[in-house]
Length: 289
Image (spheres, rainbow, N blue to C red):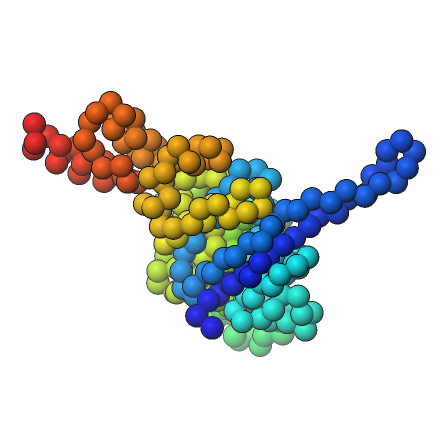
């Protein structure tokens, strides 16, 4: 199968029980509704949506933390509804959460990174090689004997990513990994996951509400109220400024600047995504004046 993740008419329904009028009542909520998504092996996909849209629910499905109410989700060819494949699925797709402190379990960096492989029963000499290799991959080799508590937020998140990498997944799912970080920490984490995708060929599924992070992806998927409402390349998605705003989302800052300039009659490309593209467009504009 050429797809790392393949969703076919995927549905997920949350159920909650509560007391009302001295009665116990049950309420259901459809978080994902007939979702069809194909994520190619080795690709970098960003998933966008406002709070409560269903994007984090989809992320948890990929790691089999929850399984479909209806429909099917395959991860690396494994059907997530089949219990006998859960171990294979979690080895195929590692998960990085918003708060790195929730994933760091040891008091020394290298011991934390070794935790996953140890639980897999990997031989000690191989664990040592894996730990050294992944710490180098995320640029944290110099910190291997330090306490995670002494690190910055961005450094902690890179350690969390290293811990997942040490288990040799083919895919990494990141659920808003930069939400708690300062700009420098966000930059560090984005450089790390982009490099892992481009140089190591690891499939990246990045859940984010930062539009400038989504710009780096090969494809962007927008989920609204549990439904996939937009899908395409960053340029194809972010050029639709009014539509994104209707779904409660922003666009990259320079894209909005281009949008407003065009509204004022200035002939500038609508699909500008980066400051470099904006500078190039302005230089071209000056040549025509």
